[in-house]
Amino acid sequence: MTNFLGEKEKLTFECETGNYHTFCPISCVSWLYQKIEDSFFLVIGTKTCGYFLQNALGVMIFAEPRYAMAELEESDISAKLNDYKELKRLCFQIKEDRNPSVIVWIGTCTTEIIKMDLEGMAPQLEREIGIPIVVARANGLDYAFTQGEDTVLAAMAQRCPSGVSKDDELQSSLETSTTVLKPNKEKNFLFSPTAKKNLLQTKVEFKKQKEVFSEESSSQIFEKSIDSVNTSDQEYLKKSQKETNPKLVLFGSLPNTVATQLKLELNRQGIEISGWLPSTRYSDLPILDSNTYVCGVNPFLSRTATTLMRRRKCKLISAPFPIGPDGTKAWIEKICSIYGKNPIGLDERESKIWEGLEDSLKLVRGKSVFFMGDNLLEISLARFLIRCGMIVYEIGIPYMDRRYQAAELAFLEKTCFEMNVPMPRIVEKPDNYYQISRIRELQPDLVITGMAHANPLEARNITTKWSVEFTFAQIHGFTNAREILDLVTRPLRRNENIHSFAQSFGSKNPSFVQNL
Image (cartoon, rainbow, N blue to C red; front, side, top):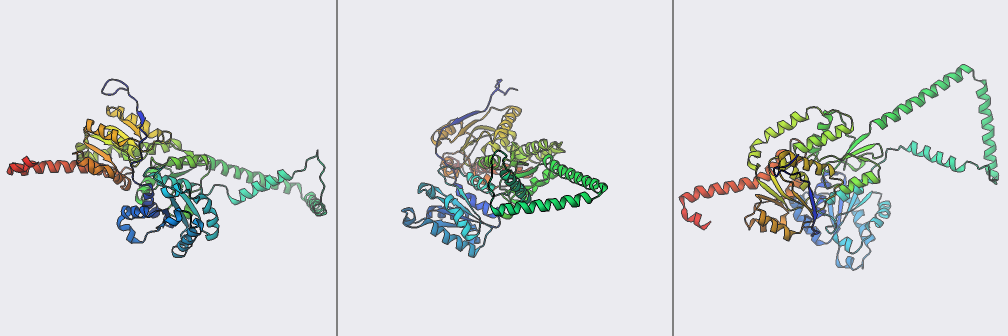
């Protein structure tokens, strides 16, 4: 296929190695503490981190939520105080006041700079207080905005139970011990008197069992052998059934209403979800083993995906993310293909959603958009907006894992071909100085950017939209596609209203138009 320039294009990737101009990753606390209802989040940082959380979360601070700040003073930073004793005091206070099922320590930039060994202190303190302690790094030096959730889920994935039962573990340990203690004919062993006595008792018991066995009739022996064969066949069938029907676990934090919508969509296709990471309660973490398929719902969870594959031996389903009706359809189709299901009614459902969005699509068709990069949702949002008829000049993204987003990138390329539009540039860790120069040259109709750059761009007559709003909005699934378009069209509608008001008011007051 060719684009409107008449030549085949491919996605181009660049890296400008600029700084992270993003929201702080410790803000993941704001949605994770609500998602994991029996948890407590302890952010270990300075007063600046506390001020940020208080301002970022707004009035939620008055709701007495399940998170707190362990503020580092000058004496902490200069190593005059014992970090372990101070954290122990705080954790015992948390246990007494809240008694959570899990405590999550969130490391910040300061803990990285002064080299606090949180991972070393957590296991010992966990044994003392009797509550699991999960350590996650969410510093803005190494991670972008939404990667805070990624580090928390990656740490929590290692706490998930495995599919091996205690009986199987005991059996394997017995087999291992039997193999280890099996005598070697080439060597002579010296037995202690106790060992000789135990060996003699074993021989006597074996002789008694042999005598009882010889007294049984041949028919009884035959019936027992049949029963043992049937039992082994049933165990084999159960084991093979487990292997042919692997579990499905979805990872990524979503509001309960959105998670229910995705669950119902998969249930319509005959696919059941075995669990979510994170779960609503820490005690309900999903079972993870080699017989588990995992699939992500957010594009910023590459570390979690790597942990699930390498540490827990799960199989990753590489699919586009369920953002927009096109992405949701592709996400469901990929999961159905893994489980050998034929998708039912997805084309009709997607067409119906697009028909319902027609009033907003008329406003965005032919408009251009520029992503400066903030929350790692840029690839999926750009793909959806291209499908809506917009032109994307550039996709800035703080961090790009091409392996985890391979299916999304391929889907973006396919969407550009189908919509007959040029491929956007993808710039990792963009340099803001160069980006602003490109914005001045391209003059896009809309710039999706972080909060720090919105007002300066607006002062230069460039229409902007905060990228952080897409993070907190419900944008997944078929029914939430309108939420994305509402966020995009709101500044465009505002400009149209201002322009129409200026024209109508200026016709009556010419001096007003001259002042504008």
